[in-house]
Image (cartoon, rainbow, N blue to C red):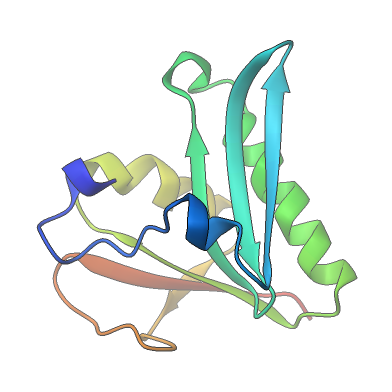
Length: 125
């Protein structure tokens, strides 16, 4: 994600952030090969979703998103939010989120709106 974002505009978490308090990470596997991962904060923010290049366009991201949304509903959350990039490499992820029902919203938390990021939300109730 850093390669596809201008300096200072990526909010991607490293391993320490993804394994910190309030974060849940799920992974998808194809045998012994990691196919993808998704992270959801306790507050209902999708913090990371990645598919390994060998598994693109095989439904990995859709399955992980569905799992994370089911977990959010199970936790009684009323919405899931996310911040993502606007560069062309982010377009497939944005299309996936839109197919799942996410809509545009303004910044949340400590995020600041700019030309290199967008904010999406899915109401669960």
